[in-house]
Length: 193
Image (cartoon, rainbow, N blue to C red; front, top):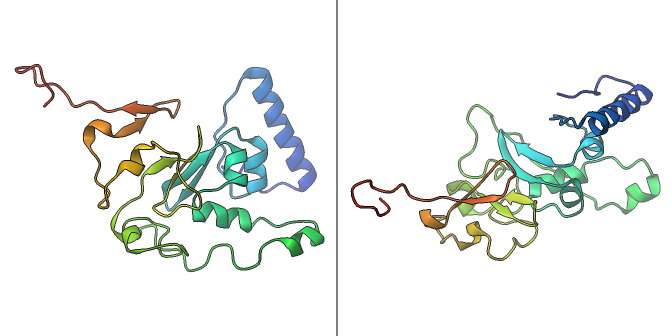
C-alpha cells in the first residue's frame, strides 16, 4: 500500500527499479495500491481502478491510460500533473472530477460514481453497472461509457431493466476470461433446474 509515497524522488525511483528487477528475476507478482498514477503505470502489467470499494475499470496500462472507458478513470488521468508547461497548457481544461465524495458507509445506489459523473442518467441510480468488455483484457462498469463496448459482450445483451438470462450470464475466472454459468441439474430429472 503506497510503497514509495513517503520517499523523495531519487530514492523512490531506486525502490521502483528494484521492485521491477526482483519481479523479473524471481517471477514475483505485486499488488500495488497507490494514488500516484505514475507509479501505478510504471510497475503494472494490469491496472484496476476502484471507486468507493467497487472495481470500475480493469485492464492493461496502455488501454487504461490511452482509452479509458469509465468517466472516473478519465477524470483521474486528466488530474495527472504535467511537468512541461507547454504541454500543460494544451491539456484539456476544467476540473477532472467534480463534486463531493459520497459517504463510503452509505454509498449511493446503483453506480457509486453517479453523484459526480457528468454522464449520469436515471438508470445509474437504479442499476449497478456490470463490467463489460472494451478490449481483449479491458473491462469497465458503466452504463454510459466513454467508448463503445465490444460487440457480443454479454452485458450489452441486457434488456432495458438490466436483467440478463441466467444461462448466458458470464463470470470471470482467475485469468479474467469469461466463464459460462450453468444451472445445476436436478438429480431426478437429468435436466437443468
